Length: 316
Image (cartoon, rainbow, N blue to C red; front, top):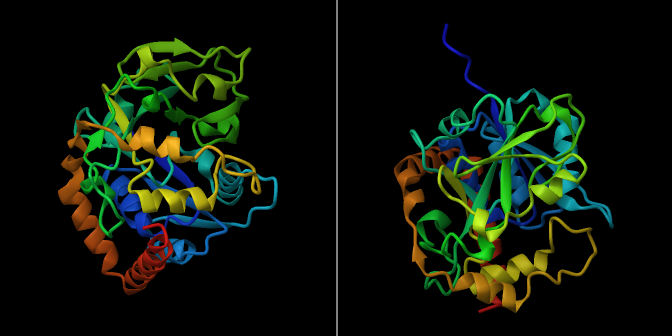
């Protein structure tokens, strides 16, 4: 008897990412995610309209999220997605931001091939970032970011320490955070984590899970089986727009002190070429062309690009 294909869901929680959403969705559909759920948090750039059009066409499930002062937008977005939809029925769950693209190095390079690498006793696959810089691009222009930015930081660089996870049995956790599931309430102890180099460790349940699955020590950074490409800064004008929209992982109303000029400078100067994600380019182009064949999706995509162009013009 053929073993049933695991259901693998992707969650994202975004604000004002309009021009980049189509590629993000198309890329992860190409990788084989069974469903993609996206919460839009108080968007004013057309992102919510585009996501609703993608929802109507069956590409994503969109949840609008009005964030109250003091709430953490991403966490609240995930909570509302979970309250409205059966997220817990997934076999594996992953959370990625709209500037993060899963890049699988094993098998046929799909997400199914990645989870197939995990032995039955593995509960979490923990992947490090591969952080990409500006790569000579000075100003924002429309087009896939995965085909625009080609230079990343070397593997053993602190900017690659952040971790994103694929977790089995999401119903065994109380909450969904942007890096991992937290608040384990299941019965399997200890939980086993597999890194991208195949090495493993067990979660210490005396310590918060998020502290153990937020960053790895530099010596533990690996991109062996997979990485997630993080286009953290793109161009200077795009970065300023990111800074102005606020942080998704901090309470609404809190001043954004993290995304300063030093953050941009450190990440923009990446010098190691990495084109591995271009393995998906032909299928990505076909999927985006298919999606833009829907008149409503095309209109909203054009609208978000127009609004974004106007917004970033002041930073040039």
